[in-house]
Image 1: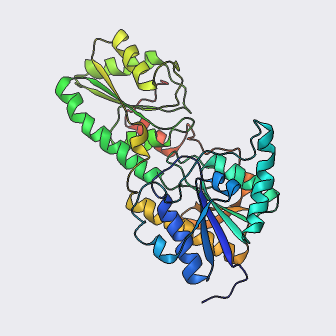
Image 2 (image 1 turned 90 degrees about the vertical axis):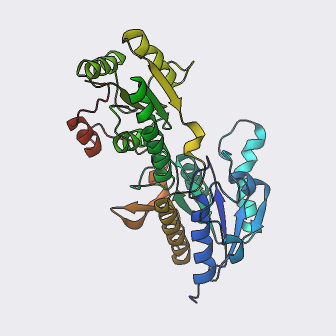
Length: 343
């Protein structure tokens, strides 16, 4: 067993849940315990547990059997300890720092998305030894090519699109599938391509409802009996309704066709992680434990060109990895006649 001065580390999961969180916890914990002889504790409900000193001891046996589980065994929350709303909020960073030292922690692993990484950076600035692990189904964390949770979400969204093809064809309808993605259209792009979508609408590419309808009319004029529209929830639309409902109503008012919408919602975030997400989360977790052992703090583990590395947390917070309009997948879709509602 390797000798290291690092003795005790903490783990937390923050932000929205997603498939692969338990795989990441397992990857960190098992590597820390087996390879480096560390003691591991898990904070309850994200940064809330760190504020209130709510935690559980994680032994190796506690990490067995969780690889395939959805959600997170230690819970999560959207607590933002550096966001000042009331006078009490001013005390949260100081409480976290005090609890960190009271518990004798030598490192802290923060697993989450953009907001979690921003908080992790602020904690590193006040003296905590922090390592970040990027997760989100939206795949929009800056600094890494891939976040775990994304592959599972794409699998679920693609299966939904696959199933709707038969209904659309049977009834000659336009079927609109709304997937998650407030700012980034990665799920819509991948699921739309994998599922054979005819129109893909993402927040990064401005669309015209008239051009969407023109595409649908063109398909009917060319004797194509149905159309599949895959849309990210964050496209420009009236906030009084879902993006899918807006498209459905707009299409039916302009084209003589039936349109039906399906909003996948939280089904994309729940359930067992895909094999690829299990592997990616495990790789991230194991590498995070290695980084702690080597004293590589103030960083986020990342996958760049399929190589594990780290990027400074200060470069991650406040940025998002978005779909570029000239992304190779966008171009390939266009070359096959897929519309993005802009031409």
